[in-house]
Every structure is written in C-alpha cells, then in structure tokens.
Amino acid sequence: MSTPPTPLWEVFIRSRNGLAHRHVGSVHAADATLALHAARDVYTRRGEGLSIWVVPSAAITASDPAERDMLFEPTASKIYRHPTFYEVPDEVGHM
Amino acid sequence: MYSQGLNTAEPDSVPDGERAVRFQARIDAEEKIEPNDWMPEAYRRTLVRQISQHAHSEVVGMLPEGNWITRAPSLRRKAALLAKVQDEGGHGLYLYAAAETLGVSREELVDQLLAGKAKYSSIFNYPTLSWADIGAIGWLVDGAAIMNQIPLCRCSFGPYARAMIRVCKEESFHQRQGYEIMLTLCRGTAAQKAMAQDALDRWWWPCLMMFGPPDSQSLHSDTSMKWKIKRFSNDGLRQKFIDATVPQGHFIGLSFPDPELRQDPATGHWEHGPIDWDEFRRVVAGGGFTAQDRLEARRAAHAEGDWVRAAAAAHAAKRAARRNAA
Image 1 (tube, chains in turn blue, yellow):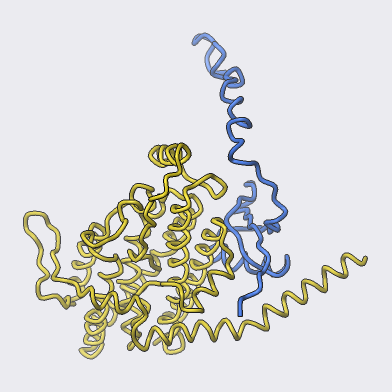
Image 2 (tube, helix red, strand yellow):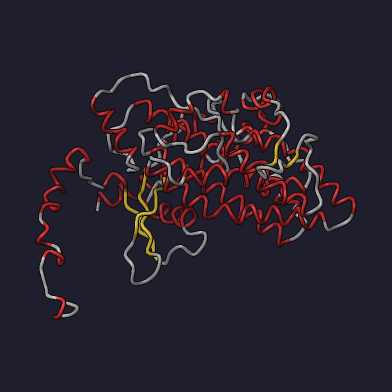
C-alpha cells in the first residue's frame, strides 16, 4: 500500500527581534497548526528562533529561472543607481 | 549522522548539447544549482539517489542508538542520547526535503525504504550489543560522517549543501558525547575498559567501510567529482579519518584491531591493513539478521503511525469544510 500524500509547507524563522523571517526549509503536515508544531521540532532545537511562519508551498509563486537574464540583467547595466558612480572630491570628505 | 560512498553517479552518457555545456560551466565557476534550474537528467537522478540514501541512513540510524535509551547508565547520558537520536530524525527530515526539491515525493521515498528497495549506510546493519557501542558510534560513526559531510556543505546542489550545513553544525555534539562515553569507560574499572575495547574492535572496520569502496574500484566517481557533488575521493577521506582518530584512541589507552596499523614516519599518515570488501558488499545488500530487524522496525513504526496521519488528515478536511461553509 502506498502512503497518501501530506501537504508541504515552507518554514520561515525570525532568529531574533530586529531581523526578518528567513526561509529555513520545509515540513509536511496535514494543517497549519501541525505544520507549526513540526517546524518547531525540526528547525528550532537549539534556540534558533523567536517566531515561526509556515506557508503552504503551493501558495508560493516563483519567478522562472529561464527568465533570469530578462528580469535581472537590466539592473546590472544601470550603474548610475550606485553611489560610487558619482564623483565627489576627496577634500569634501565622507559623504 | 552519516553519508557513504555507496552513492555512485549515473554515467553522464546522454549528450544534452549546448545546455549541458552551460550547466558544466556554471558548476566549474562554483555557482550553485537550484531546484528550478535546468540540469542533466543523470545529475538529477544521481542526487535523488544520493540524498535519499543519506536521508534513509539518518532515519534507520536512529534504531541502533534508540535501542539503548531506556538502558542509559545515568540521566545525563539518557538526556544526551535522546537529544542525539532526535537530531538524527531531524537530519533525515532536512534531507528528505532537499530530495523533494528534485521532483520526488516524500511518500515515494519512504515507501521505497519500507519496501526494501532503497539502500542506506551499511553501518546501521550492525547490532549495538553493549553500552560502550553508544560511545563507539558517537565517536567513530559520527566522526566518519563528519569527515564525509563537511565537503558536502560545498556540494553544487544548493538545497543539499544547505541541509548539510545544518547537519554539520549539530554533528559535533554527537561525536564529543560519544568520545566522552569511551573516555569515562576507559578511566573506569577493568571490565568497563574491556567493554570499550570490545566496542572499538567491532566498530573500527565497519567505520572504515563507511567511506565506500577504494578509489581503484569506485565506479563513476569521476562524474560525481566533475559535477562537484563529491569533492574528495573515498580513500582520501578515509585516510583523513584514520589520521584524526588513531591518536584519540591511543590517548584513552585503546588499541586498534589492525596488526598492520603503523604511522609512516615520512608522511605522518597512519597506514592500515586490507579491508574486507566482501563483508561490505554483503552488509550493504542487507545480509544478516540485523538488516531484517531494522526494516521491520521501520515498517512497524510507519504502520503504527497510520491512524495518526489519517486522523490529522480527517481533522484538516473537516476544518477546511467548515471554513468553506462559513
């Protein structure tokens, strides 16, 4: 007999206040409450976090890696978006 | 806890043309490959097999140590062993999750293990006969696993590398608690020291086998190297393990069950006698009583959890139906 599938959840943990929640991995669970329990057991055995988010994996929309160049290459050519593009004489000091 | 050189790469025989050339160029440039990126089918299959074998090993690896939780000699040892076995379960879960990013389901992988179709590390097909075996496993089996797993933190496949970083961070406590058990036994009565020596005598050779067949017999290892799934050869890692471990054993007054073990004064390396690879093949193939026992224990645990999974699914369905009705 094959095992019936259990939904997949993505786990995000805030390691301490002042930091954003960060993706740490995933767990399988029947519902959100059990997903939180599983995430606590699997990803916070050594004080890794103060807060956990779980999100159904199916709810995530991701960009297509094949479109990476189209999406992100244009930012590389816009060097005038970076502070180092502009010239400030040394005498002016730190700016 | 573990990973082992029974993982062999698929031969990269099917030419994938231009995409494959670009893929290899990314690997050569030390770029990580992520799940949705294009990858050769052989790369995907190799990783699914290696990561799932690794995950199965973590889960089956809970059994030999779980055997001693209720008989640990003190509360301190019992708490440590419980935490260690729980870590092994966690490592299995990180690894299953990494394998799933390649398009296999958790349930498929679990069913393969329960059906006896999947391999796991041969080391867990040996029985834990005395409390000293718990010391030997932590010190030697986890020690060998660390040697194997540290290079995997730099593996070309992102999710596997990230899982291994978490595993390696947790692994160090496992090895230290094992060595402490051996140290305590060696400083105890003559009978306790003899128990530690007996454990080393039984676990030493199987631990050397954990690194997999010698480089001269290892199939497709070069493909794994080319893809940067593997970074060091089996023999290279084995040598590193021996060099690190032999002085630790001598320090606590134990001797190794290898009459040919000697330090080369020129290189400083410890040279070992021949390894019985026939035994390795027999144990990996699931020969012996313990292998059967391990699978039966996994099957029983899975079957006993059946009603829990069914109840959780029914509860979730009922709540979802109520939400939809409201």
